[in-house]
Image 1 (tube, rainbow, N blue to C red):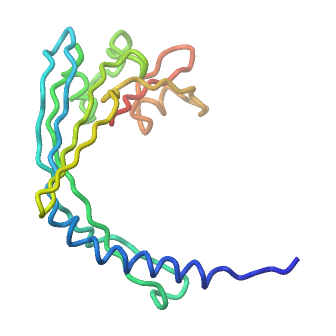
Image 2 (cartoon, one colour; image 1 turned 180 degrees about the vertical axis):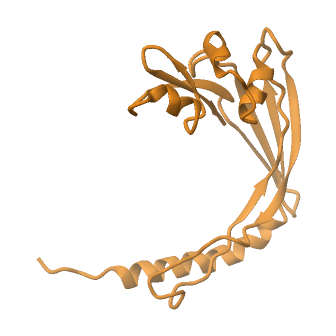
Length: 185
């Protein structure tokens, strides 16, 4: 069979998508997005609702590269809506979590009896988003309940798994060779 060069077609399709985006970008930029986070009740923290307004963020430092040194492909600049949310600690070892995040926990062996719950056992939270457009249109969607922080065990695959785990691996080592890492949303 003949070999076909579909690159020109793909570049043309991409350019058309960029032009379509330019029509809708002002509408998205004018959209207000709010978020509600429904936190679960745990033995260490009462449940509750955390609310936040998402802010627009232009990705000015976004790197775009192509094989023609930027010739022939339309420029694209992403637009995001972001927020920072301060969440309460849902576990009994909150001070250790904070110290570990700051690389200040000594000795790290103290973690041995205080691992986070697994993905299946971790408390779950659900997000609810509401968008409001310029013409008064409103839309909303929610996520299923998902764990915010949980333990992810992995097998140590280095000659010195204990040293790697505590150092560059940023985890907790438990015998017989299992590393535990805090995974967060």
